[in-house]
Length: 262
Image (cartoon, rainbow, N blue to C red; front, side, top):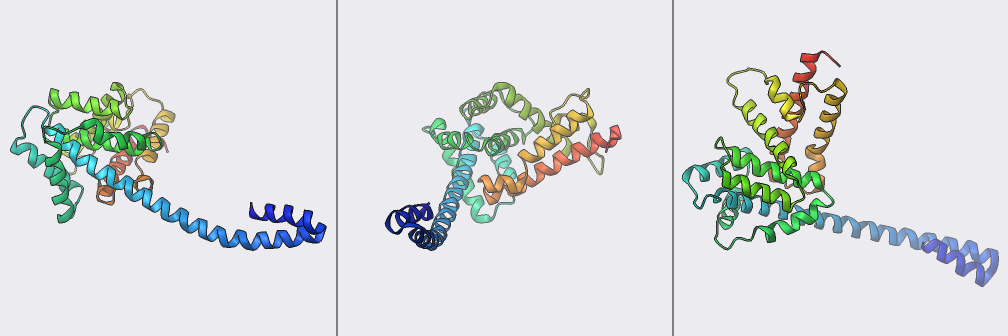
């Protein structure tokens, strides 16, 4: 832009030689300002990423506490489940203390769900995969004790609707979470059951080989840890994204092995 401006000023002031001089001066200024602009952009992007990570982390555990209190009380089992989710995430001691404080905040009577989810809703307009991960974490936490109570189900559906997910979307994600949980509870070295593999990939057993491959590529792209981290997934939750990607790959390999395609 500066080069073009320099050329215009130069050609009107000194003709052809002015054009060359203007181009050269503009080139030097462009280089200087490009470096400054690049540094400014990198700082702005880093700040935006940190803000997104912070929003995601705080909302995750506040909403988890809110869902746990859906039936009007928090049991010792629900607290144990919350801590179990934190262990699965491999949170540090400091992060665990903060997560529990946020969890307790979500239990308060004056907790405003829509207010907490508003920043995530804005993020979801650009980064739907990241916000889908948020919903999956809430479902995983609700399922950690085996079942989702009716009151919890209602709140999770409400969360999904606020964030732009339909009831069918939530049902599909819940089926995937249930299949993952069932697979993780298999004793010994038993392989993944075929029915779980299809549920994890959100497929019917009648799906074609092409549909299986397409579903796998879509899901692995949505849950790729590095891509989610670049979009704002907090570092503390990378382990969960890695586990999710592993489940998707395992499901795909199970179906591929059974069908015999490459």
